[in-house]
Amino acid sequence: MNKEPEFGIPAEMRALTEKRVAQAKQAFEGFITAAQEAANLAEGQATTAHTAAKEASSMAIEFAERNMTSAFVLAQKLVWWGERCWNPKLRKLTMFKLTQNTFYMKDRK
Image 1 (cartoon, rainbow, N blue to C red):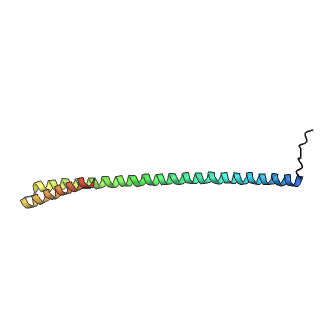
Image 2 (image 1 turned 135 degrees about the vertical axis):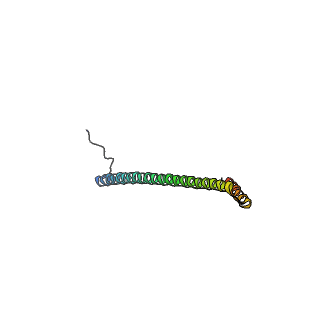
Image 3 (image 1 turned 90 degrees about the horizontal axis):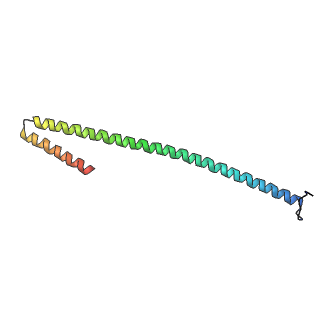
């Protein structure tokens, strides 16, 4: 009584259909595996890109800090030299360069 009804389908066709279903299942599992590998690869590349962007940002900030430190050191030297300059024309030129550099820095922001 546990026998399945055949509905008139030949055994060869049934076997072929079962084989095709198994092949389709295997192909789908291969597709899923490939999709998971691609997602893992993309995640790894995103992590690498994030790390590179973070490093570039850090380098840019470090460069800006060094640049501004150098500019302030130069400004302090110009002020010091301008105060001690015995020649009024050179003192005036030094102070002019200092103010010109200050305005240039403001425009760069």
